[in-house]
Structure formats: C-alpha cells, structure tokens
Image (cartoon, rainbow, N blue to C red; front, top):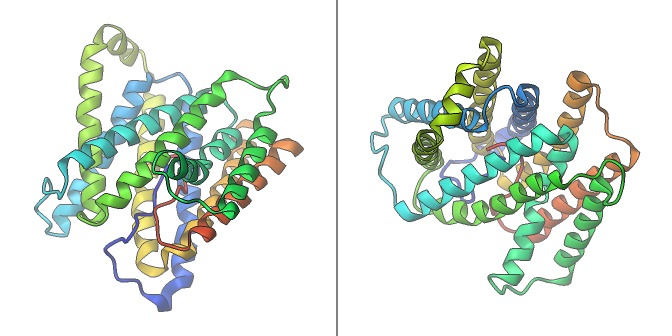
Length: 312
C-alpha cells in the first residue's frame, strides 16, 4: 500500500492541479501493476526473497535520490523509535499483501486492503477513545457491507485467506498513524529511505535465520522470475516517486479519493493477465467499499495520510 503523507513538506503549485490529478491516476495504475506482477510471480520466488528485493531496491533508489538532492543526512531522523515502528508495520503489511495476492483474485485482495481508512476510524474510537460521529460510523457499516459482498462468507469461493488482505488493511491503518507523526519531523523521502533500510536489515536477519530452507529455494528460482521481481520493485518505487510529484501539484484532499481508482486498474489487469473479471456481486462490493472509503476521507475534513494502495 502507498500513503499520502500528512503535512508533506512540499510547496503545492495550485495552478497545476490538473497535472497532479493525472499523475495520481498514473500512480494508482503503477501500484496496481506492481500488485499484478506479484500475483504473476506466485510461489515461484520465496516470500522472504520477494520482500527483500522489493525493499532493497527502494532503499537504493531513495538513498540515491537523497544524495542527488544533496540531503546528506540520510540517517538523520527526529524519532528513531517511530521510524523502526513504521518499518515493522510496513513490512508486515507487505507480507500480508503479497500472501493475499498469492491466494486471492487481484480485485478481491485490492478491495479488502482498501478498508484501511475504515479500520482507522475503528481504532480511533476503540483504542484512542476519540469521539467518532455517527456519519463516520455509517461509513464503517457501509464498508463492512461492501466487504461481505466481496468475500461472501459461506459461499463456494470463500476462503480463510481473506485474513491476509484484512491483516494488510489493519497494519496499514496503524502505519498511517505513525506516518502522520513522522511527517512532522522528517520529510517524505528521508522517511521512505529509512523505512526501506530498516525493512531490508530485518529481512536479511530473517533470511539468515531461515537460510536452510530459503537459500535452496532461491537457488531454484528461474531468471524470468527474477526479472518479474525487479519489475515489481521498479513499479512500486516508481509509484512512490510519482506520488511525491503529485503532492507537489495538487492538494492532499483532492488526491486521496483518486487513490480508489486502483480498484478499477486491479480489475482491468486481472482481466487482461489472468482472465479473471469480478462477478456482479464482487463488483458491487468493490464500489461500496470505494464509496465508504471516499466518504470517510471527505468526512475527516483534514489532511491525514490515507490508504491509496495495497502496495507500499
């Protein structure tokens, strides 16, 4: 999943909002392409290796970007603890997202991951004890109905694997809160670099701990699969760069609802690549989830980071 960082440290060119909207639409297509590639890869590449390449690639690109900007304080942050927590949450989110894409149709996994803003509302009420108005609760209920339409418990296509994208949405909701706090002390590029760095180090440790199984599996991966992995990492990192460019050109309140356009691209790529088009009830459920998410965004009435993608 991708975020729109709250209070991003960029001057917005209000005369270029149209370009920002166009870039944001391209961003959602890029993230959908990344998710589609993960599904194409399937189980051909071990999950740990898939995650390691994805975050190593982002770390290198963001680090080079910082050097190009002559921002040499690569490791300078206002909160080491929050950066580590953010990386753990994002890595868990990516693991759940990738696992869900291996087991579920692309539109289903994408739409369930889009429940993050609704889960944020629940967390605000239940954990932070915020006073949540009835209008926001209505959006939560509508989103829950949309989820039921997508997964249809008890139906022939229902599987326990729906827990993966729901887990991705939950961890991303927590990730949003941490990102909001970090946006006040660190710029977006520094934060994305440090997140990728911490995630890469954690994955190196995990690969080392599981080397007896992971390394032989990596040795069996075909060259074509590695090309797909690099393409996936490129699309994900490009999406982050495009999003930063969109934020320079258009207000966050305008861009965030456009993130739900990823559902349309997910459905399109699913049909083109896998011959899997959402059935009527799934399509209705996707629209209901998108409507409830957009409603939640509009009701917030403030610039907060919100989910726009299943890939971060």
